[in-house]
Image (cartoon, rainbow over all chains, first blue to last red; front, side, top):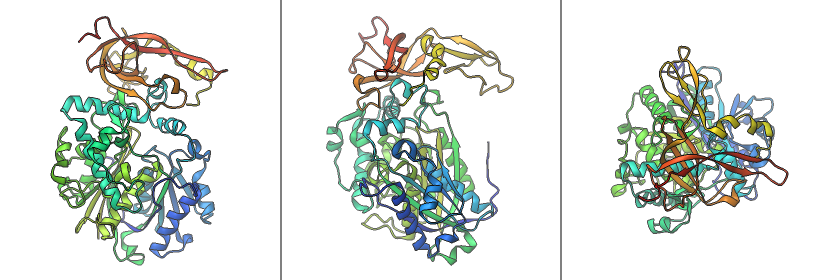
Length: 394
Length: 139
């Protein structure tokens, strides 16, 4: 099934902004959204009132801070009324889906300047409550009902994957070591400490075989981007970044109903459509942002996006290939694992990192040399939603 | 999980208490939970009830050590995917088995258990869990 958009206009990213991801005790949801939005608006040199519509990715304002109706709240707090504001929810893919909505609004010719953002405030509630909120991303009646957690569902994938492909715990740990190394270079990352495989192996079990260092943190954070038609992008920026494709696919919410629990079919489908639309192949990609909510998720992503055959992702970690200086740099901002995971904001933050890389603005020693094409993969739940975005430097 | 309403649990008790699914008469595929539309045959499909034998094998497993709201007093506990003999997989807990003894391929059978007790005034939720069949623990 090809849901190809007959694209009327090319779309450019003309301004970006993010908060740092982490525990922001001093900021609430609205302050985080404001900080990221203002940064994007100032970078593009526009007035907020020029924005014609905006989309806000937010997974669960209701569960995390008792606040629904988040989009209008953010519009209100930014002083942007009566601009239409739309909240987008697709669990951890809320940001990616918000980006795709904004992309379609500009590509279709409906609007000339659209803001897409994401925000999540996660640290105001207790851990077990937050765990329950995240469990809402899976089938609550047939998975969470039996006491399965979000790490637990990925642990079920990891256990089967290790069994089928002979992967060791030590090989999972290598993914986390790389993520923390990149996090140490990124001033906006949640965790900036380098770790060793021994640290990972010594960390407590969360859901066997996954340990604390296999899991991303719960972060507070926000991210925002401004989108404009490609032919008007020069008005706002000297270095336009073009969206070559932004595709989305769905799969079953419950892991047990999947064709193969070690493959995210939604990622595969979205990736195939994205590469076809962009007329590119995995070999063309210079820098990658994948949805590594758990170490196992990063391995599955590399395989399902087409960068290696099934069961072979660990080989990409030999000889530092996935580091910023390597052949296939993955998650140069530390990913979700060390960079942080503010669920609704993550899908936007990933593409902001690609924009910084393609512009040559990635500080701290994590810049990939002469990066021209970037790809981001954002996943909701255990794979029921996947968004793949390919960007290119103009 | 703030699942406080009685009807929410009552609605699914037939599937929860007796592990029932459905099957498409046209293509033969079995489903859990009950599907009302066959994804393969669409309108040509003919869905019929299918009570499962309750027997199957552990397809993959984990131990939940950081439990969600309401499950704190049970942790650590085993969560497994069981592939039923009829084909579909289900998520459930594995009981009467320690975390060290579970393995992929372990033959198991469904049993009727208490799933969760809500707060003092809350209802007690029952449903299926799985346990190793006799002899399954000796590899």
